[in-house]
Length: 185
Image (cartoon, rainbow, N blue to C red; front, side, top):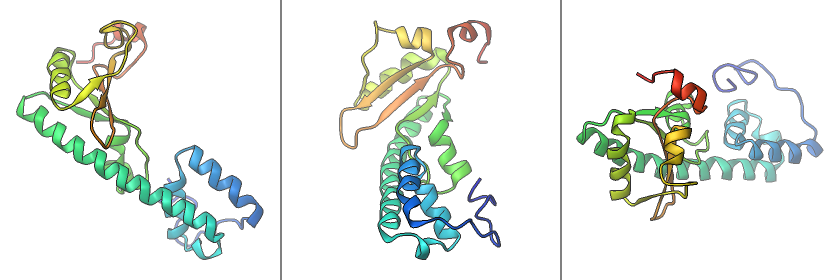
C-alpha cells in the first residue's frame, strides 16, 4: 500500500515526525516486520535526509538483511520447485514466498521466516520424502502425522545453512472443522 500509491505517493508529503518519536517508530516497524518497507517508503518519499542517521542505518540494515535472507531462501525454493516439477508434483506458493514477487516486487521488503507451499494431499508423502532427501527434517510433532492429519501442514527444517523452514500444506484452511467440510480440489 505504501509503495503502490499510499501515503508516500508522489506529491504527498508525510506528516513531520519529532526526533524523539523515531526510536518508537523504528522499534514498532522492526517488531512488526515492516522495517524494510519503512526504509523503502522513506527513501521513495525522499525523507531519509530528515530522519535521524541512526534510525536510517537500522532501517537500511533491516532492508539489506532481509534481502540477503530472502535471496538465500528463494534460491532454495527454486531448487525445490525444480524437483517437484521433475517429479510432477503441482505446487502452489503461499504467503510470503508468493507475495514477495507478486505484490512487493522486491524481495528485500518482506521478511520471510519460512516457505509455505501447498501440495495435493495425495502428493504429500512424496513431497515429504523429497524434502527429507533434500536435507530437511520434520520438526517435532505431537505424534507422527498429527500436524498433517489435523492441522493441514507439516513443518520441515533444513539441516544445512542457511537454516530454512518449509511448511508443507495440504489445505488452505487449518481448522479441522473446515478440513473435513471443504474439499481442496
